[in-house]
Image 1 (cartoon, rainbow, N blue to C red):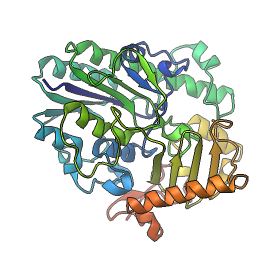
Image 2: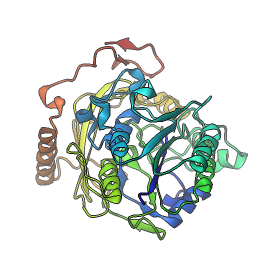
Image 3: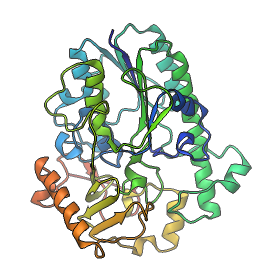
Image 4: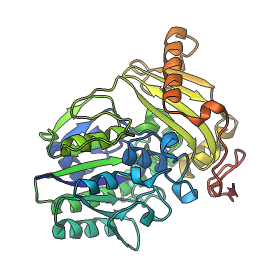
Length: 414
């Protein structure tokens, strides 16, 4: 009998939770890791909400599937029949959507058999609804459970101790402002963990494939909406048939576009022709690719990451509106963030510089040339429209301009 599939996904969590060694207590997520397989080197195909989710659920890169920007600002998939639920329907699955989805302004466009309406997408609403569906469902089913947490605005810190002592991400200064901001993130992560626990407690059938991931990195400056590992590095824990058991850890290089073909292999069904990823059951990546075109504003970048090196190609100057508003952003703005630029090309040796702070593109010309060529070949093979020059906003979409500082400022409509 084919397994049920429960797809759990959070907002803006990166890998900043307990199973990845951070002091962010998430005991329910830790339980899932202890029972399944945790991937230490998993990456999103895009460090923005819609692009990441669209790539995972279509098995295509965002410049291929059409999701070059944000769904709630007007971007759409080029073909919603490439969404995973349609392939699963052909295999006899029913599908239900609960909570966040972020690949269409209208969730009815996607093709789920059932879309559960809720007052909010907070874990406190989403998790009980998901538990009810699991307990009452007839298999085989695919259930998408999307939590708003840990998107900003974060919850208030749950203790004075957290506000005083929480360590901010390594790329940010350790100040009272950033410590309190991190404490607020931790409060949201606790709510996420409680939601995950409620869903896990409802799963009684061992023949259930549980996939838990997030869209991209933390909503802090230098993470989300960047192609650093802080931006594209994601949690990925899988439990269930296919060998995803035993509390194991994998250091394999994995992209979220690998999830769709992996599901096909677990179910024993044919992979759709458009898939770009590899199956986690049998294939190995020696590199992964990532991109961003539009977030709040146009700021195109492309990257290739191997086990040792990261090469990033930037096509425009940094745009402040692409950084989520936060106390940490305000602190950096007060200290000159708006005056800082970024190089067109960046190369990092991730063995000696895992924090991606020392750009060696001029020091290692042979490595830079090799990865530059490899990135270009990927762009050609996937028909990246950026090869033809700047990409205009899609008709009817909304965007911030390059001179704006906040995504909350008035948008322009294409």
